[in-house]
Length: 250
Image 1 (tube, rainbow, N blue to C red):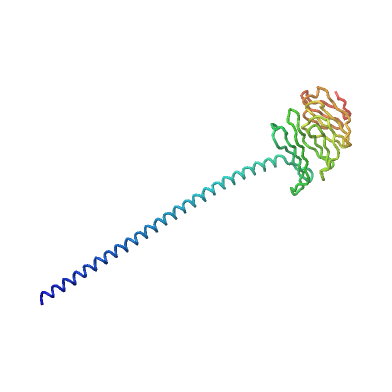
Image 2 (image 1 turned 180 degrees about the vertical axis):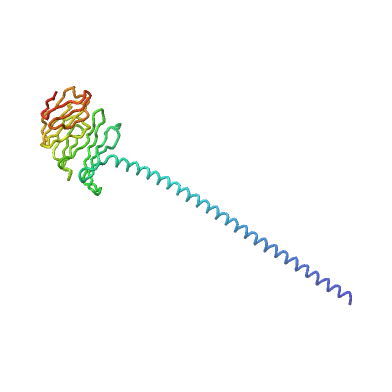
């Protein structure tokens, strides 16, 4: 009886030991499976973090590039604004801008552009002259506006234009290459001066050439103004006086 009791107990213990081993194996498999899942999740998380860092770096790079381009555009706009302000002036109830574009080294020359704006800075009209060749001669003069007419000399030709509409009234060629604006008296008589001959040109209000002065005494003429009924011409020789008929007053 005692023998059988010991045998039964031994068998029970052996069965329990077997079950324990199987449980251990199952626990190991479960643990390994969870560890693998954790490793996989960590890998995916790390990958997502790397992608996130790449996305952030890409965004920062784009922001930097956009900021750099924005600053560049702002600088360009500032230069254009400064150039615009330097070339525009108030005239009566309007604004006039005179400027040139292009390079003197280009074969097709530069472009002279005249723009007239109203009081609200809306463009009213414009005129342009293409293919102007740059040399020691003035390419175009300053402008003058008298009694609703704009006067300007471009490439040796005097242009008169209606200041309101921009309509060309008349032109006169071969009056030299002045950089000083034409001078107009109360009768509408027009006087232009040049550093090179013809040094003085006098034109009536209809566009007829009245007289020109080519005396070398006037070489380097750079300024003209009225002194009553006379003209004061500033040149290398000093200030020389003329009447409006072309006679030098000594």
